[in-house]
View 1 (cartoon, rainbow over the protein chains, first blue to last red):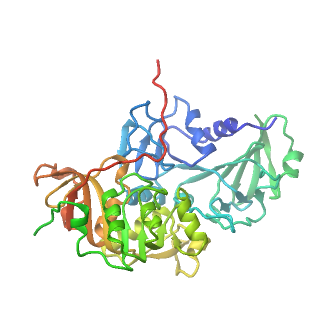
View 2: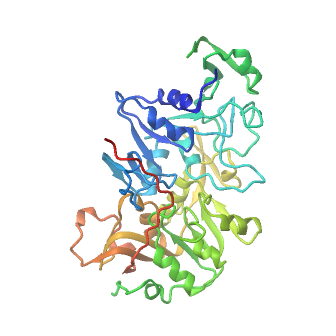
Length: 216
Length: 233
């Protein structure tokens, strides 16, 4: 059985280590925050100028001056600090953030990422995505393995305009987990009852299968 | 020298002209200079180039200047919250220049700091780097980005004193400090205007040298997406 969106978020959360500073994107990445174990001290960064992002505020305590990068009301923690957008991206571009977890439309076997623009459709903008993938130490992508049409999203080469070149380190989909490095793309783990053949059938990118392929 | 004004309209008097470039602080609707935007709408100047991370929503923030078609060009990183924007862009009435958010922030910071250009890894290999100078540093290809200044910067702060020193609150800081430094003239609207000496000098975010005019404005402080949780137990 392929993983649910929650399973994917949970698996991505395993990539977060004690003491990490982490930036989470919109969609499945946002859900990752719910699966960070209590044994791990992880600090969430929000690129609009906040380190130490707390949960949504209790009803009635929302504050117009306190939002996350999705423009949702949020709360602060004891550890929280606030700063300008320039300082925020100094953290990101300067390599001080350990992991960014983002969504994607397409990922190539060389780690190229496309997640901000579909030609012919209204372009909303890249926001901070290009800075994040260029600057943070590790980029983890969470996404559905295939588009709604069934088309593969793990490709030999991205067809959509790129967000970054050779920037993706890991991809978690509903079918499994892939690592991308100088050797190319490697399948590390499979979701329950998913076979390597099934993954191959639904993937355009070429990948090798890890010797110690894990089944979760 | 007089820095304190009574209203947004008075603080903008003599500064506005058709075709000018204005940078406006804020992220979404958080930390936007509401009264100054409304006063620019009322002044009716046209063909504006606006530098701001977002474009407001249809009926608030910079959306007000879209309604009246006063904006010719936007320089932003994300404009997904505004249907009016989409309509004007798709019909060719509105020009749009996207910058990665960190590059936008740094271009503005550079202008205020007297740095004409800088190199960054952000955007290399994407449409953002097209036509721009590339250079390698420590084996890594970077793209040159230039400083971004404006005829006028409009910013919003929580507290300000009569010498123009500003303190922002929580995530309402965002682009405001860099913009305050990057405007030929900077007008600040503050929630609380206090006497010089009332702010802790160690905790000032924007020193008064960057602010030419200041006034106290009553704010609506609209929330774009209210998200909450129930009280536990």
